[in-house]
Image (cartoon, rainbow, N blue to C red; front, side, top):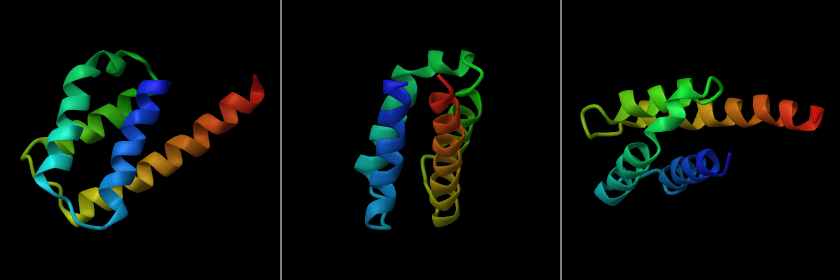
Length: 86
């Protein structure tokens, strides 16, 4: 879960100022390259695929940025429910 939290932190950082710069795109791509194995975990696959699709053209549009932020919010809500059951 730590790695996914790192990804969510990167996505939140990209959304912090509303401006996506090259350094943020490189950081996000680097995280995906390093943690690609998480795609085999069923609860992470959609998030990893989403980020992969967003990074396909190396440009993050406002629409893609908002989509990633919404998805991470939903991901956290869904997984908070699972964690509270333990």
